[in-house]
Image 1: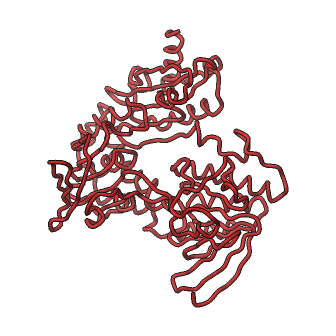
Image 2: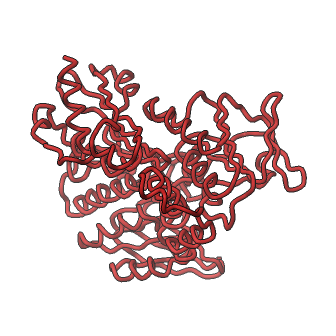
Image 3: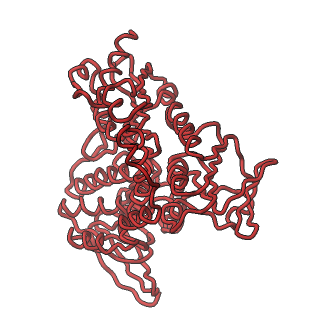
Length: 476
C-alpha cells in the first residue's frame, strides 16, 4: 500500500450493486452519511451480468413465440430473429458495460463512492485498495453493511476449471452464439440460458444431475419447461453426473459414466456461493467464504455494528429480495442510530420477514414460471395442514384470447385451518404479471372468504383467481 487516507462516515457499504445502492440511499434519506465501496461496476450483477441482460436476450424469443400463437398475427411473422440486433439490444441495457449513469445517480443521491477492493479491518473499519495500490481507511460511526453478493459455484469435476467454462456472466455477455452449448444445471439460470441460446442459434444440451428441472418449484413447472425446451430442440438429459472435463482443440468434452458430451462452450449453472472469501471476515471473528449469519433485521449475530444484506447472507439469492433486505436493513440502521428500539418483529418496517415464506420469483422460460410463498412440498415439510388446488389456465377466457391453444397451470397451496394462501404458482405464457396479486394475497394472509370479493376483470387471465376459488369451494 503506497499511501493511506482516512475518512469517516456513518455507514460504510461494501458493494455497490443494487443491494448496496439501496442501503446507502435509504440511510442517506434517513439523515446519515454513507459511502459505497466497489471494485467493479456500480450497479453490480443485476445490471450488467444477470437480470437485465438475460431478460433482454429472452425477450425477442418471447415476443415471437406469442405472435406465432395468435392466428392472424402469426402470418405476419415471415422471418427469424435477428441475432445481432438482439445482442445489440442486450448491450444497450448494460450501456456497453459502462457504469457512468449509475455513478451519476450515486452522486446525485448524496452518496460518496470509493473505487477499489474493500476489506474489513476490525470493528467498524474498512480498508480500500485501489488499482494503483493506494489505500483508504474508512471508519463507520454507526454500521458497516456487507453487500458483496454471490458468485457461481464450480463443482469438483476433474479438469472442469481448465476448460475455461462459462459462468452466468459469460452466458449473458457472450458476443455470439456458440454452435454447441453444454449446460450443467437445470435451475433458473440453466433453464433460462438454454431457452435463450437455443433460440439464438446454438444447439443446447442441458445436463441435470437430478430427475427434474427447477427442482425447488412445483413439479408441474419442471415438467412444462422440460417439454417446451425439448420442443424447441434442446437436448435435456436427467440423471447425468459429470465426472471429468477436457478440451480437444476448441471442443469441450464432458464425461459422465460411459457417455461423452461434446460442445464448443460449457456453462456451469449449478448454484451460487457467498462472495465473502477475501473481504476480511477473519478480522472480526467470522469465517471467510461463508454466508453471513444474520437476524431478520440483517444484523450479523454478535456484531451489532455489522449487517449482511442480499446474497452475502444466503437467505434469498434474488435481486428484488436483496433490495427488499436493503430497505429493511437500512431502516433498522437509521432507527438504531436514533436510539430507537428495533426488535425484528414479523412484518415490521425493519424486518425482512418475506424472506422466509413470501418470496416471489419468475423464471423467464417459455412457458414462464411465476411463484410466491410455499410449494406443496414446503408445506408438507413444515407440517402445515394444507390442500393443493390446481386449475388449467387455458380454460380461462383471457388466456384463450392471449394465445390459441394456450396451455398453462395454476397451483395454489391453501392452509386448511386458517384458510389463507401459503403459496401460488402460475405456469404459462405471460403469467409473470399475474404474480404480484398472489404476492399481496400471501403476504397479507388474505382470507379465502375475502378473496371472493376481489373480482377479476373479464376477459383477463386474472380470472384464474375465480376458478381457483371455485375449485377450492367445490372440493370441500
